[in-house]
Image (cartoon, rainbow over all chains, first blue to last red; front, side, top):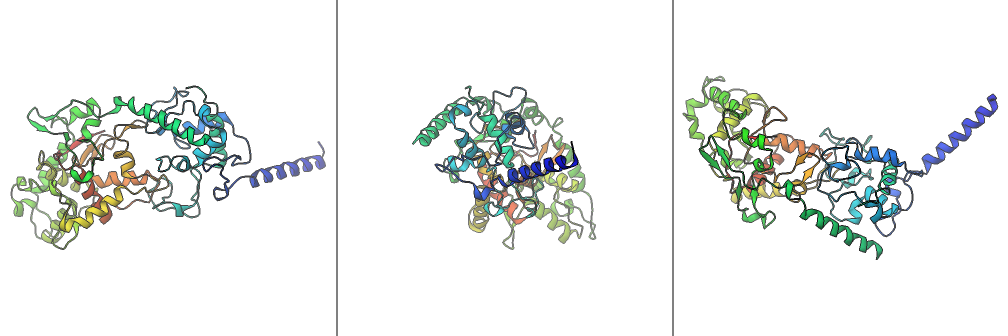
Length: 164
Length: 285
């Protein structure tokens, strides 16, 4: 590969990367359908169900098993039961609805105990903290509970859960 | 329309789930009997002010494992009793510029019977004080000694000792008169959804007691067992330490232990347990 073609390849990939980054939808710009669904990918990219499986079960990422039983994950002990099971979510809800529920379940279920995973506005919360330190939030670092891509990955995994 | 139908279907599934969750309920028949002699009620009629929010009130003891419950039934096995024994040494130990001990003014520690049951309580100046505030007031004003930290070993020892004197006495906090505004403040906090996770005390302890958050069996959050020996901490844990941990875990900015806010919350939480006895020093997971 010549120096020129390498430069060209780098330029193309940089442009692609930039367009992918700019395609991410900020929490305040999310377009909702029927109040509860989000038709468009939040990251602008498709989700990866394998990455979503890990993000959903990981305590430091989605930590969804805190509250939800998921029969597809017998390798994890102690699934919580304060929320409905995840079994069959892919059969009951469309991808857009699942994206809406993961991003902000309080739209589909007013008063739900489920946290809003895609909101980066500290003014919407009462005494928001700096992660789990117990201290006040830092305006520089306050962010959504899940990234746009993590939500896409989790949604891609949830749509595979059609058995129940 | 499609969406509405799905919501109803989802609600029906939730309902079906709820009926199948009896395995996580509080223990149906266990009785808390200390040393084979002292029976402590762990179930009671809910106080009227709850307005039916709880069908019956339960000690946190009923939500723990067989092994943990047994530890509290024997004072030799209950590690919290060691704190009360150290507390008794401190009770009799002269301290501060006046070189006085607790016993010099109060006599036998049994004179403290009933004190823990009415805490927190409004003081002569109209402030709501927890037991720790009263202890520190004695230390700084009468003994001219240093105040103890809320989580310090001597404070754990002394609060454990004083609580033990009320073992078996019903929770008897005041909710009216001078106490009313503090009680209202605490009630407001109980239902406030703090932090980025937007969780209130009520979300877990009123709406979901008996269910599981991962491996944690949610109790009704009753405080009559505090201070409690918590196996996870291998120490006596004051109630405010738990409050702080709970609000921190909502990804929230907590209040300080000993803050007026937490003392108000302590009053309200105690009032939810009116009808349950003080357990002295309980044992929890």
